[in-house]
Image (cartoon, rainbow, N blue to C red; front, side, top):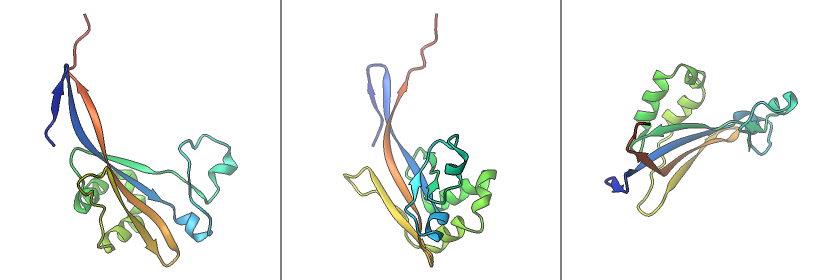
Length: 134
């Protein structure tokens, strides 16, 4: 969709790829729970049910190859080289958003059960004209 200009701002669609990866929850047979603040009590941080989702921002709907290329450039994603990225390379599925929908997801499974999800979301952002202060 081409950007729309309205009253000094520009509207555009962007895409988030949200990686939900919780192998410890699958190993311990507990329901995974998102925790966004790891500043909580230490014992909660070590709970195998808790995991933190990772969000990657794209200007266009990301492909599997683009996501893997981003992971190759980010040093902190190398912890996934032998786990999550191997699983993503093996799977033939990739989330594709159909017309009229704002998101799509796939489930990542291993012999231990469901270990994660990949979610692609379309979001609307507003870019201002960048007015300079007087």
